[in-house]
Image 1 (cartoon, one colour):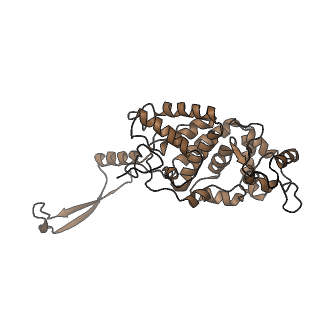
Image 2: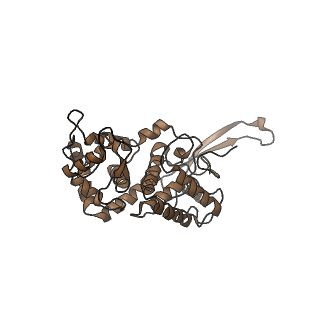
Image 3: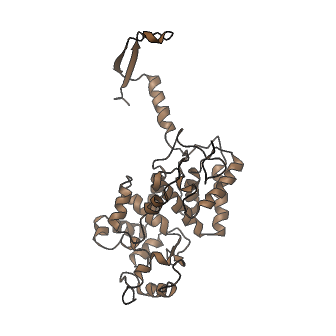
Length: 342
């Protein structure tokens, strides 16, 4: 802060008893005093998320959330991927502000955040934001790499628009340059795009038949439309997801490694054993080569430590995207699906 200067305005001739005697003002520029610098540091610190935000006001927060997550994942493993996706959705739409948790949006996992909120409230009432709960839950749900979750977010007063929520994440058939552009508009680089959105969301979890049926059947001759997909896998999926079948049937995104957060997903990508078009384009086509997404896949496929580090750092960056802090928004009381009543 050695080059910082403060603008000072002095009111001249003002009588604070008789306010009508104000004469004028004088403007000057000066180097900040040590007290002023300390004041600035305090303001900056308050506006940043920290790992120990709840250290004194809710010291048991992390253990409460972790216990809830262990119980939930034992009951339904798929919820791990859902909570990871929910947190990323929340951050991408309006910033990490729990706006997608309010009534009117429909994203899987919202009810689980409500359950965790109830448990947290029993431990420390009305101090933990709904926006912070998915951030912690996403880390604990992954079952893979760990990272220090930054906390101190506050909750939005308005719900996210449903159409905005639906369009925030790339569609399963979206082009690579479009995917990159969406994240670039948020100031997020290629590593964050790939490690968070693609690998992070798809090394665990399931996909519905409707999200990859475009790769299974040619619209005219009803044979495999995507020659890149492994032939044996395509045949299995054609039987599992037949034409005019139940499009809501689900199958693992990471074939032969359904519930493990590992590098197997990247090996599948390189071998044509992935489901979604938006994943396959990361390793095939000119755009993948130019943008180096293919080289990232190759690196992650044989270096889980690298992937773990990039994934953790990317989750921190995503979680720090435009959160409400200080006095913005509110801390929702008993329910994450509704704002506090006035």
